[in-house]
Length: 265
Length: 282
Image 1 (tube, rainbow over the protein chains, first blue to last red):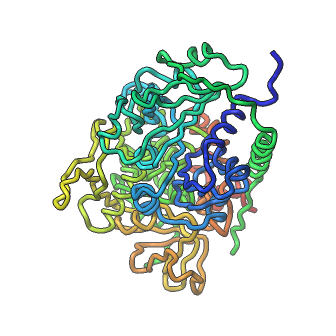
Image 2: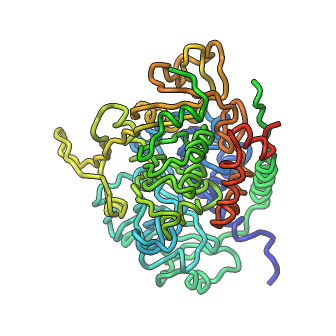
Image 3: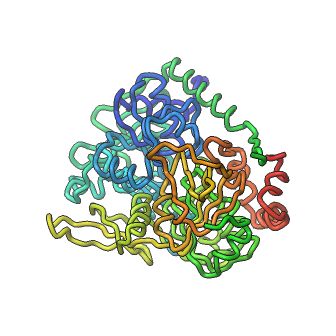
């Protein structure tokens, strides 16, 4: 097999970016979600409104931030608001269209764990924890999840439920009163999973070029169902790929710059 | 509001066993004040912070804390806080009791504390496992008007909140600009408020609605240029993302962590000396 001219991370980020429509208000997690949202903004969705949980609203960073609170986000924002306001007045009040999340574990109903691997009291791996994810997962009108697909991360049973997806499926989420619709798509390094319209179980809906159903099944810890219509996605658009590489090169240069502080004022 | 040297402000106002919130959401994290707590070898602290960040990794690894209340405990954009993980996973250097919230809950807890309320309220939806962990402190109440179920988050009132800010004026009023996080709420919730600032100016040139903490709310202030490094102070210096990346290696191992802390924190008299030793300041 010849090398496809892009990496699994790149096609995942480009595919995730394509899920965002121009003009949407998007609450962004750090890492892959941040890369995908900014790629969308510099390509097909120039009016995408990006909100980071640091309270930066309508931010247009020229380089990808390392943290959710880099100065770049504040300097390029429409508004910088206090944290109680971003969570209560924007997210909880229902003013966010899309929440964009990653996690350490996901189950077949799109529920997420970012708290611990193992027992809570004696964890094998203590993960960073909830952050903004539980409320993003609850209140955003819809959620996109982006994570690499492995049997360790796509698990039959979460070690800890940090953020709700469809709970036990078949309408359980709506019955619990969660205002948002839940995960619309899970974008991985192999393809895209979407919820079944009735059971809400995540199904394999699309694959990248050269990836087989068997490979996707082998990377999933539950017996992955395949949607009635399985799509094969095209290779990433060269312009999008170039925009992503530009963004990443600018980011590496910016993060490598030494800091100087003047102690005499 | 007295202006004190930082070591005197911390020695006077931070005691063993206190609940202490060093706030600042990614921005304006009071590193210099945290290092002074380490130099003064304060013990049995209950540390409170939305994002523990490297400063609490350092305080925890140096044995200052027995409790941590937090909502996201990672190295932002990099990965784990290895000293926090070591304390939780292997009780090194001592056991650490966790009080764990989401960002929205902890911001609300500060806001309740700042308002003199015993709790803050938010809508209740599906329970997550966070509501079931040992020591979980959320409760469910019913709205007396609508009958709707609400989640009650207990107020947080730290003994001491410590902030870093850009400026203090001649009267002792303090200006914060840029990402403000829950700094104002954490300060107003506390019994005592300590502030470090980049510089003193005659008058603050602040917008009318900028975040200014009036001098009479502040217990003591110290002038510490670079006091947020390796975090940042908008308008003064950027976040040292290279240091955050480098910390991943330094803190991964107990020995390299301890050696770094002994050399760069315990082995220097103050923050200016630390910045010079790291080659960040001339």
